[in-house]
Image 1 (cartoon, each protein chain N blue to C red):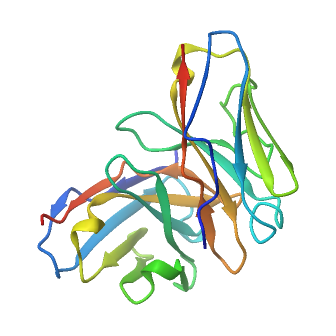
Image 2: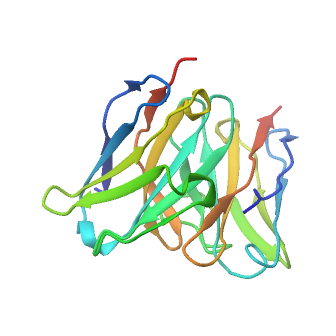
Length: 110
Length: 117
């Protein structure tokens, strides 16, 4: 199972919006509505930000949103804030009780 | 609240095995499966496998099949991940994560396993 493809880096100024893509195949991203996104700050455990493509867990700001089209999922962070500066990983169910992560995107708030 | 507490850091010699534990609290242990994910230094997240806490059945990522064993103890609400035939490339932080909504939430604090060359 190959890793999902994410851009290595993304950036934006405070208040701006940034979108991070996550490209897979019809066997993972395109085949299931089970894409999740995680935020990870240095030295910390990942935190779930989006599940089932576009749903937010309780406590996650509505500045974070997700969507999917075909084999590509996207995470959009609106109204960028300094604390959004972190690594972001997508993850997709790939069938038969297997999951696959993306390579990660470092988001820099300028 | 839901909490996953993992065992402490380990240093192992090449060829040895390591067993990492993850103790769950704050929910009914057998309600949800548990993922194991690792992260090598400076690298991304890598899914290792999942254990169904109710019956102990497992599914492992292809690259770990034959080397990883995941088990659980329902009496202590603890899951275990044992990785054998360790090599330098297995140096990583290993995480457990409660499987909910086909995702992982929350995650344990991580366990650093070091395999010196």
